[in-house]
Structure formats: C-alpha cells, structure tokens
Length: 190
Image 1 (cartoon, rainbow, N blue to C red):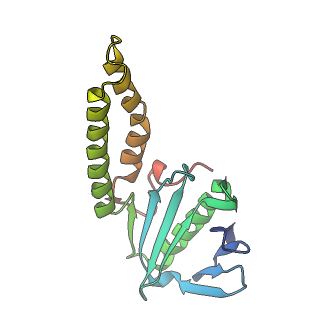
Image 2 (cartoon, rainbow, N blue to C red):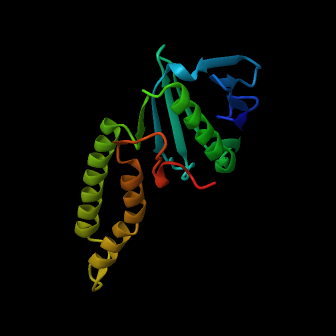
C-alpha cells in the first residue's frame, strides 16, 4: 500500500494522506475523515506541470471519477508561510502506484499530459501579448536612450525569461498519453 502525505495550505491543521488501496484511491483528511473512490470508476487522468510563483517545481496529478468527483494532488507541501517543501520523492512513486491500479482496474480511462487545451492556448496567447507589450515598452521607453546599445540590453532582459517560458510550453503541451508510457517531463524527478 503506497501513501503520500501533504498539507495543502495554511488553513489545514495537519496533513492529508492519499493512499493507493487495491481497489480504491483513499483520502484521509487532517480531521480523520476518509473518502474512497474505486479505481474502476476513474474516467480520466491528467499529469501536468503547473508552477506558481511560490511553487516553481509544482506537478499535479488530476483524477476524475464517474460520479463527477475530481481530485487534484500535487507534489508541494505547505510547511509554513512562504515556506513550501518539495515532496517529489514520495509523490512520484505514489502516482506510479495509482497509475498501475488505474491501468488494471479502469483500462478504458483516458490519460493526458499537460494543461487542458483551453488553459494552454489561452495562457500562451496571453504570454505572447505580454511579451510583445513588454518588448515594445522597453524599446520605446526613453530611459537611458542616450547610451549606445541600451535597446539591446533591454531586449536581453526580456530574453532572459524565455527559458522559463520554453520549459512551460514544452511540459504543458496538451496531449493524450498511454498510462504505461508516461512522458519523462510529466512527473518530477524522484
């Protein structure tokens, strides 16, 4: 039986425990309440890289069941205010164990990697517009324009953020996957 524990946020008094039982995914809340949903009821799952400003290495495992319940489980533990702990060492084996149960109990479940198409294309469009606006402002802003090469320095500032954008674009691209052939960038390194 594989388990994974994490505290979601400031308002939770303790850690949630996710457990891979033979026939169900079980959640035990900090208050001791247990909820279980059968593996055979899984309809879709999604593995996605979903960083935030404070949680830059955040990966999420979304699982949806026939009754409409959707659970999102990520690899980042809330340790305190502005203090987050990466629990990938426990999260990745937990997700692999859950995927094995889903493959065995719900062979028709659909599996995806990356963001949802609406989210991916919407965010990509927003980022393109924002980058264009930032580049236009940096080029046209008259600050330090008397110094040769300042326009190039301004563009280099914009270009410095491109590696982060490229990583997000590559890992978040929405695509169907096989449960037994998980792409390397869909889960964090253990």
